Amino acid sequence: MEQKLNQAVINTAQAHEGPIETDAVIVGAGPVGLFQVFELGLLEIKAHVIDSLAYPGGQPVELYPDKPIYDIPAVPVCTGQELTDALLKQIEPFGATFHLGQEVTTVQKQDDGRFFVETSKGTQFLTKTIFIAAGVGAFQPRTLKVDGIEAYEGSQLFYRVKNPADFAGKNLVIVGGGDSALDWVLNFVKDGPNKAESVILIHRRDGFKAAPSSVAKMRELCEAYEMQFIVGQITGLDEKDGKIAGAKVTGADGVTRVVPLDVLLVFFGLSPKLGPIAEWGLDIERKQLVVDTEKFSTNVPGIFAVGDINTYPGKKKLILSGFHECALAAFGAVPFIFPEKKVFLQYTTTSPKLHKVLGVESPVFD
Image (tube, helix red, strand yellow):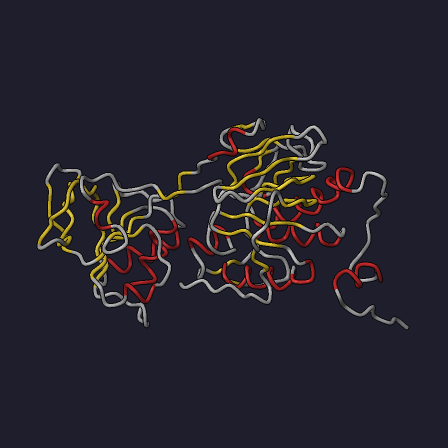
């Protein structure tokens, strides 16, 4: 899927001499990072947003832009891309500035209490607060360990599907036993514009971590001879004329067979990597940032963590939970940004001040 940046919504950074002075820097432009812009905006706090991807949307857009999401409050169903587009529209009044395609490499506390932040592209900030909304960190797909296979990545080997139409009419071998593998198997087998010529699923065992309904449907398709499932592991490649002609699959019986293919899709899940975040002096537990549940502050005052990157008792890795965390984190940041200001909870339904901030007319009630 080609990602399009709506310039009416996204303010991309301009050249700047010296550090950019700001009240808030948000690390991560996924759904939770975008909603953090909104919650800060209601409190009249402007933010700069940094993300390693070249477009906003984070994991939902990068990994499953067209897959339906059903648990966003008041939205019966939406895709990852639709959710991102709606959030970008919602934060439009607040004029956040985006710094995309770069990773935060340095965070240093200054004598005046602010933080010096620098990215991999040399962009520098002096900010009063930092909000880490980096999802599972700098996530990378777990790769298939076969000699020489790296040469085919992007041509015949793929770890994610951005545009399903690219694989229509192809002989596909899909490897994995989780939801992503089964979802794409079912997608490419069914009739439609993305239907593959053939689909073979390979998994190292006959048990799956995917939804039982997906597994049951896959088995039905196998019984109807609409696809194949092979228990085994890919141990080598059959190469001809500079291309992969087939995968060498070793089964539980120790016999290796060649499975012909045009394209190999591998879904082994993600390997979360905190990257430079691990060097910022924050309390970390199992590659997640420890926070309180009052302000979602880390152990470093002024640095907050929201969404899948954080952990606390009872944590649930849901987008809707991240949205809740954003609201409390925004209020928790106020003393660092407006130390002399008392901020009271107001409602977007009735507050003239919030209507002004949002750029909407206050309703007149009888």
